[in-house]
Length: 139
Image (cartoon, rainbow, N blue to C red):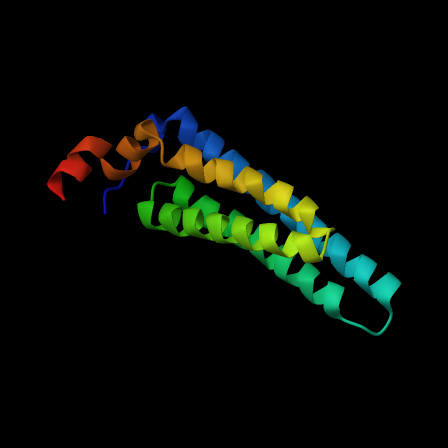
């Protein structure tokens, strides 16, 4: 594992971190809102509360993994990219059945944008220590 210099961190990595953090904070807020609405409106059924809890946990994971990848660990960056993609696909499907989850889908797309920025060539060079062409040629 290469330990990149934080002083030479590209702007794309900074923006990726900002996208991950913003998406995580908004998902946590939406999760809490879903929990409160679920408790107030549904009474005894805990379905909306469970969905809100899952959304909040995913938001917290975005924040945690984003902060770990911001320091230059490419493994956490890859894990977060996979998580953002899975969450977007899952919310896309679930929003057809639970329309309120479309808000969480829009927020999670911000996190997916952060993952895309973290895999741009400039970011890839900072994370791995060499450009992406060298990696592709060595395989």
